[in-house]
Every structure is written in C-alpha cells, then in structure tokens.
Image (cartoon, rainbow, N blue to C red; front, side, top):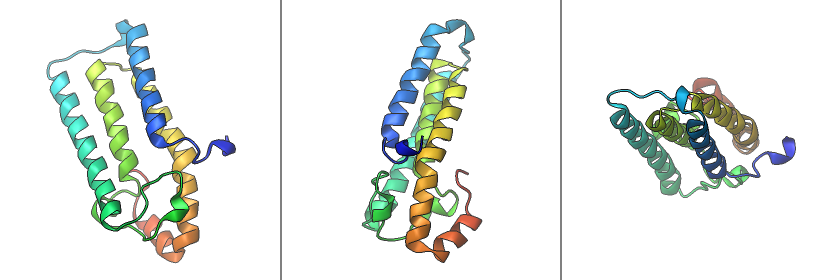
Length: 153
C-alpha cells in the first residue's frame, strides 16, 4: 500500500466512504437505527464538522501555506494555532465528523465500521506521510509539537 501514500486526495476517500455507508444502509436496512432527534443530531454534528473544516482551512489560507494534502512538503509555515493547538489534524477530524453525521442521518450503525476504516486509511496513507514531511521540513519544532498535541483529538 505504500504506493498509495498521499496519491489519493482525502476528499476522494471521503466520497467513497460516504457512498459505502449509504450502500450499507440501503443493503442492510434491518441494521439501521432510528430515534427521535436523529435528523437534528445529524445536522448539528454536520455543522460542527463543516465549521471545524472551514476554520482549519482558514488558518492555512491566512498564513498563505498549502492546503494541498498531496504536497505536504510544500508547507511554507508551521501551523500550531487555532484548532491545531488541540489536534494535529483538525481538517481530517472535520471530515470524519461529516461522515459520522451521515451515519447518524441514515441510521447506518454498520457505517461505523466504514468510518473506522476511513480514519485508519487516512492515518496510514495520508497523515503518517504528512508527519514525515513536516518533521523533515520543521525538525525539532514539529517533534515538540507532536509530543504535545494528539494526532486526532
């Protein structure tokens, strides 16, 4: 799988995972869970996920550095402010929250397995290569940051 590292952009993984969650919900309707407030909870979680995503991207744009996940070595500045004080990967956390909102909306309990797979794939094929690139570029500053701030939350 090493040839896949940083080759497929996270939005593609997101869309593929979202489709798989929908497919599981459609193919196994007996496993779906429905409860009062489900749509509201899904909408709130989705809104938080979008806010996390946009806020995180905004920090990168404000600091005029790349948001391209396929080229982490092109980072111009090290970001450790905003949500990056609490998570090394708030953009990925935001899209994971969107998938969780989709799972809740559909009631697709089995979709949690797909979400876990999505997070595993992002960690192995995107985040770990990004971490290596950032360590190579920013050295001890990044190593210190990595010790203080968790990868996800």
